[in-house]
Length: 185
Image 1 (cartoon, rainbow, N blue to C red):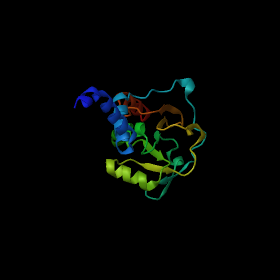
Image 2 (cartoon, rainbow, N blue to C red; image 1 turned 45 degrees about the horizontal axis):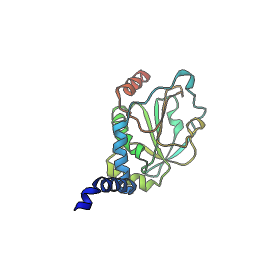
Image 3 (cartoon, rainbow, N blue to C red; image 1 turned 30 degrees about the vertical axis):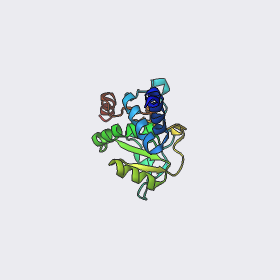
Image 4 (cartoon, rainbow, N blue to C red; image 1 turned 90 degrees about the horizontal axis):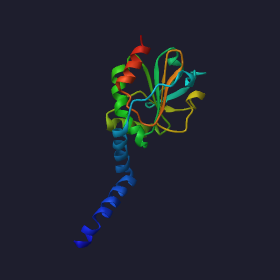
């Protein structure tokens, strides 16, 4: 008993560290911490905005069909590159679901993963997400080719990338909703 009291802090630290390393508990704990730190994404300065050079991007639907990003030409759209094993991706999905619930009928949403469709479907079912999720079949347009996930793009009707956010963000914030409302007018 004396040993446990003397080394309680060390034992507690090692237990927490072990839980973070163990995937079934590590991802949810890391996602929870990320969720506490999330803020609204910022809009790119005018000089940093780029135009999409190409909308031709074939995606596979999780249930087997195909979709081409060109369907979203001249529309406001949000593209989120993510994975089920990525804690920041998992952290921001609840805010993305709320944003989709509010704007899904007026904004084109693409949640794109490079994972196995079965893994993605099981994850969505377990979390009760109803998001338009696609599997990457080919590389996205050059302006959206990144190496870090999550990365999310908000694109206006003219094809300009107004937001390019890497890392978890609070997507259902008042700031994002106000921007979307102005773009949809």
